[in-house]
Amino acid sequence: MDPVQHIINENLWLIIGLGVTILIRETIVNIVTGIIYRLFTDIKEDDVVWIEGTRKCRIQRMGLNNIKLFMFDNKSKLIISYKALEQKGIEKTLGSNGNGNGNSKG
Image (cartoon, rainbow, N blue to C red; front, side, top):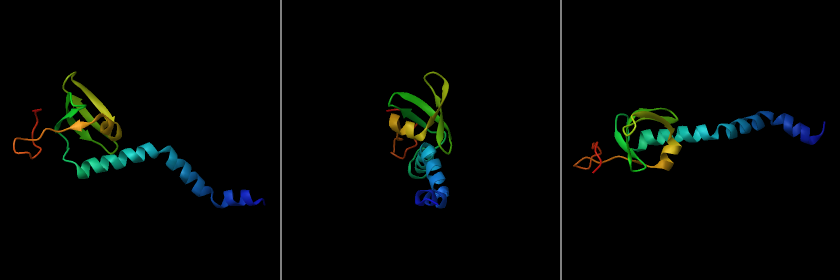
């Protein structure tokens, strides 16, 4: 048996695993970003936030790899990945005492 063929046969599971990981890379990144948003930010469901600084919306559901928002400006729902949300920018208005419970933009 040729040495290259032997290496491929011995490590086939590793090659397949690497290929699958490359294919689902974006999903893994979104899941990790979602976990970070849930654990390390003050943003939670039912909060009123601002997307791109101008679009007021309410967080309806924070899923594993995406977030569902109700957009006040056109009365629609938006489902967006955490990675895309991070690129657009999200702001939460602080309350009068700075505790993050504010629901209106100053």
